[in-house]
Length: 236
Image (tube, rainbow, N blue to C red; front, side, top):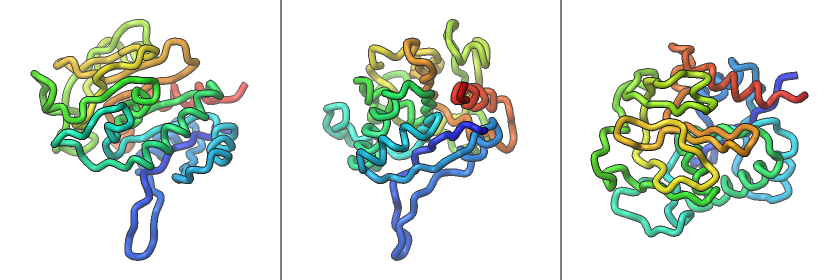
């Protein structure tokens, strides 16, 4: 059977009189193409339900999305902070807490790697303009266009997949600042911005700042990351 990959939905948004839970097809198709069974998880902050999800799904994908509220890492908001949703942050943190107790695989993408870092005690740049000597990380080109290079550290899952360097797309204005103690930085942009982390003590916990799912229809060079993740989620 295909491993069930839970994908945390974006915050519910209201259209006319209805509210919707949603996620980009890029994520679901990337998981499906990698051999997984994508399962979209709605924001319902019920501890018992969260625990049941954590027990039943085989892997967790935390996608990109809105900014993380700085209150989650004990900072006040700065002028260039984008849209935030404290309730959504708390739900994702509660879900991640329940899931990491299972020791099942986790993959974080963009906001996903940021919320992972906050969960483990790290902090974020609320806007990269607050960081010196930082180049543009919010490209205007299509999602399947590369923007900049990242250098990958040896002795990492990413190095085994991509080698020492990789050209990636870039759609973020926040980034990891103080990296949580249990996380190892495994990729940097040329300006020093953290582009990926892993937890060496966890069976499979990887976070990347770029959007590998953006290449699902045009360039399959990123698909190896999803295949590696889904493979780690397979039951014995």
